Image 1 (cartoon, rainbow, N blue to C red):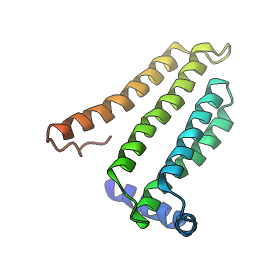
Image 2: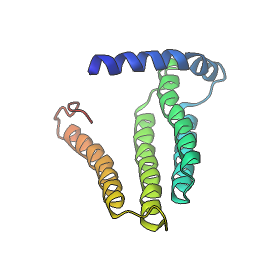
Image 3: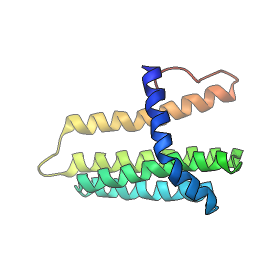
Image 4: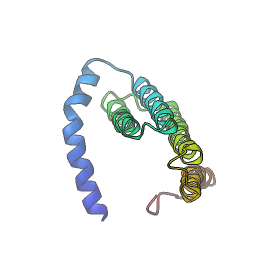
Length: 151
């Protein structure tokens, strides 16, 4: 499974190479890409909350591109910094919260799609994104290698 995933990622990054090269030539700061991606994710969360599911999917897909490109641009321009990594991971949690919060709101309030099961699943996903991030950060702070597992 890992080999297949690596192949998919390499192929996708090759597809994104011209966009990354253009951003590098344009001297776009990676933190700007991180911020744009997060704002897009928040907009996607709002779209989910208001029941615009297809629009939310489109926005989230575009936002994901920024999340990928920020790291690529940072490495290519040698702008990878500790602050940049902190900023990226912090805004990633904000994006997770906004997206899953929007879904949670939708499933809790929709007159036609209200579902206690989906509220529960979405809440577990929301908690899971935060606990995975927290567990890894805490383990690393204690000197434990936490780069294991599927998540």
